[in-house]
Amino acid sequence: MAPDLTKQVLTSTAETVLARRYYLKDAEGNPTETWETLCRRVAGAVAAVDREPEQVGLLRDSFFNLIYHMDFLPNSPCLMNAGTDLGQLSACFVLPIEDSMDGIFSAIRNGALVHKTGGGTGYSFSRLRSKNASVRSTQGVASGPLSFAAVFDAATETIKQGGKRRGANMGVLRVDHPDIMDFIAAKEDQSRFNNFNFSVAITDAFMQAVEEGDDYELIEPSTREVTAVLSARAVFEKIVDLAWHNGEPGVLFIDAANRANMTPQLGEFEATNPCGEQWLLPYESCNLGSINLANFVRGGEVDYTRLKHVTRIATHFLDNVIDCNRFPIPEIEEMTLKTRKIGLGIMGMHDMLIQLGIPYAGEPGRQLAATVMKFIRNTAEERSMELAADKGPFPAYDPAVNDYPARRNAALTSIQPTGTVSMIADCASGCEPYYSIVMVKHVMDGDRLILVNKYFEQIARAEGFYSEELMSRVADSGTVIGHPEIPEKWQEVFRTAQDISPEDHIRMQGILQQSGVDSSISKTINLPKSATREDVKLSYITGYRLGCKGLTVYRDGSRDSQVLNTKDSA
Ligand code: ADP
Image 1: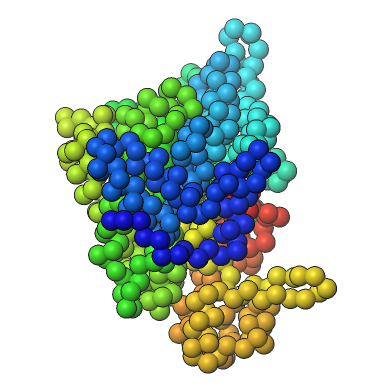
Image 2: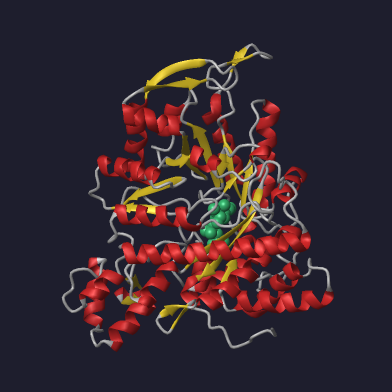
């Protein structure tokens, strides 16, 4: 397949984002690249690790076509760094924190090296002894996970990642750690821990205790002694209360994650990457990329033939990224090469549903999304098994303990936020619905510039209900619902994140998780401002029952600004 240079038109937003953060620059800071040359750089570097020259040429062209036409985009570090001296291509890392001064400050150092290259880090603080536990060497007392988390936060603040991405961290604490109550409340004050998302690692035993109204034990990690017994319901209520208050902490269902651990012989999952979609073992890293489902509707149907073709090439691409990558520290290189995890995801899922005229909120939309995700996962697995036959399975694969067929990658799929890459591709992010359909931008002299979703404008014009006046009214009300000129069908199809019920959000996450996601899903469960604590509680319980591996809720207006997972911070 030769490079297909049918001109790719970029939106002005995409051009701005690319010029500011992705195109390589000369000494004066002027971009020296275009979208086309960037894609050639990335495709060339990632194809080059396949050895036979003939194959490299073919691969380079097919990688190029995929990225240039935005059928698939790799995560930001790959777009920024492939083919450069830095050469670090992964978005996610999980680093262990051992319970010693050396362990803690090594983790801070390792995290700094990861942030410098554009990666995000997840840490579990669960191994650290609790506040006031004794320290034998100094005969003093420990300051506890939270005081050390503040040092991680300050270090991240200081390293601004060369101006391209500010650092991002996930901080996890097990629900049975003695300092759990302080951790839950740590971000009540929105000025603290701004470089972290905090999540509580919740166990099945805890959820059962909540259900049955039982107490549960807090365990000191350094001695394994029981330090206190708390009411599971009281702790759960506190998590719910603070998540209602401003969206933090999130919850991670750690036992569900570990049940899906493909290499238990290497260790347990303790934490995810910053946005929660990728569970990783200590020192593992993972490179991500997303298929843009907006590009796969033809003649009113999903074009599965082309989706298969693109998924196969994308899987090969992400597998090659592992060999092309320059890892920040040797421990990460060693672990990553053992399991060769990749995170193939999607974006533009709402675009696909809109083009098919199917609402996001409802059984038909969910069924279709699940079918597509399963198709992608099965295709990726098939391709990974072929790559294993060709190049060998991931080295940690052991048929004596792993009861699945040999493949090249221990994990294949996850659904990422795609905060920036979806802006480049001009589609809805990840598996999220659009956040708005008509937006007003205030420009000079009090003028209002009205920005209308491209599909909505096209349909409104074709069906004759487009008017500036209507668009202005939709913008002011923030929703397409309830405007009599808009046919009922389109009101349903163009429901946005805030118009979709929390239950519909969770059901979508649940069905995607069950049908085709190995790792996890970054998704926000949007709740209206009027939602109660009971609504938040119900969301968590439903998500848990549906097999989600983590949940993030956000009640409209409950935070001044969202720290992570918003387009301008990615
Ligand atoms: P992108 O669209 O830029 O490729 P995503 O929004 O999909 O990235 O985020 C994917 C992952 O990349 C996140 O879960 C996180 O691990 C990492 N990440 C995102 N933003 C940042 C950031 N500002 N700094 C470091 N890592 C980040």
